[in-house]
Image 1 (cartoon, rainbow, N blue to C red):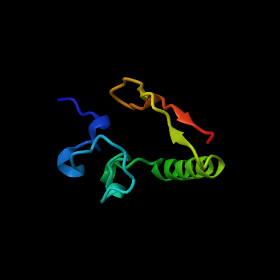
Image 2: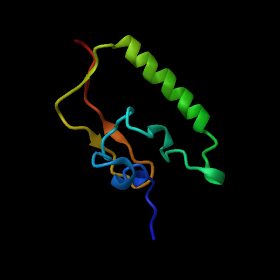
Image 3: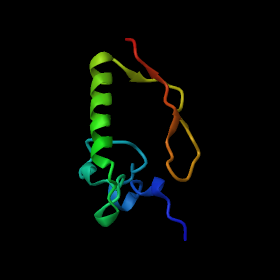
Image 4: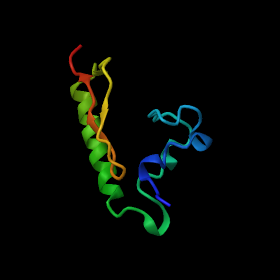
Length: 93
């Protein structure tokens, strides 16, 4: 058996047909499994949330008209700690 953390928040049975899409407005979005749970809860979760809040808030204030480009994003291809290598964004209007 291989557990894959990258699939934890992509279950269509829990999140619906568009489970592979990021939706902060999705009902229950705050109940994600990104930081584990119970005795396996990530010790750095509070710091990671604070860093994301500061970084994303600053980005939104600095570039209020930022939009995603039409070209596709590029994923790093890892099984553990997967993420984006590239996310094309236009910062100017």
